[in-house]
Amino acid sequence: MKEENKGAPKNNWQRIFRKKWFFPAVYLTIAAILLGVVVWYQNMDNQLPKAGDDQELSDNYTPNPHGDDAETVMDPQEVIEMPVADQEKAEIVTKFFDYDADQAEQESALILHNNRYYQSTGVDIVYPDGEAFDVLAALSGSVTEVKEDPLLGNVVVLSHSNGVTTYYASLGEVGVKAGDEVKQGDVIGTAGENIFGQNNGTHLHFELRKDEQVFNPEEFFNQPVSKLESGESENVSEDQDTSSIQSEEADTNSDQSENVDEEDATETDKEESTEDSKENQNEDSNNEESNDENSEETDSSTDSEA
Image 1: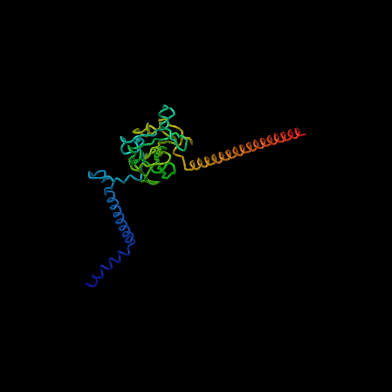
Image 2: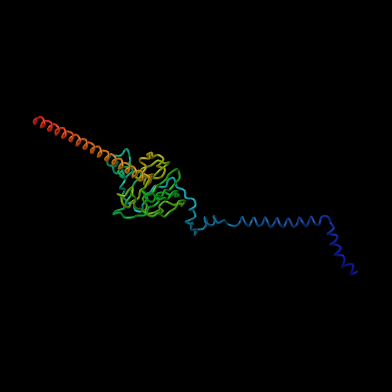
């Protein structure tokens, strides 16, 4: 009897395994367990607070000062600032050439270079006693060009939204490179000297443009950028665009002066040779006259003897 009872549980399990519904039931049970684990994990993930929520809800949150560097966008209402740290010390010695200005202001907006006057398309800014000063970004934007010009010195061009660009020339040291993103008030370099505006000593040449049209910076300092939409501008021509002057001009002028000197020398030589030929002709004519006179005297003396 005991042996039969011992074998009964095994037979019962064998009978259960042989049932058609046993293995499907096992599979369904396992699938239900796995599905429950997945649902539980998702619910736990949704209940975890996000980093942004913590930053918004936490009173002790300190924003990352470098978090927005990748996206520097100029606010349309950003005020155009003079590109210097101390505006009270800054003095504009060369003004923007305005066709509607009086004669005195127009004369102060002319730049003499290589015996030729150029109309200033920007302003030249100096500090008292020729003091060097930091040059700041007038607006937030990106550095599109950094170059060294033989006449204009170091040049930096900043590009802003809506076709606005700011132009900085006559820089001594440059602290940015092409592709950098800068914010308004960031130092981009120091004021220096150049050949084109050498009479101004240490200075900054600053220009304000929108869609390749120049604007008078003095009229827009401390004004929002949106004012450029309705502001008056001057078209940039090759004759008046002081920012586009290259060293080739100096070479061209020097070549022209050399050619003029050569032409003058040639003309001088021609004149001298002409004068020499005239003198020789005069001498020859004088000699002929003297010979004629001598021959006449000889004839007269012969006749008298006869």
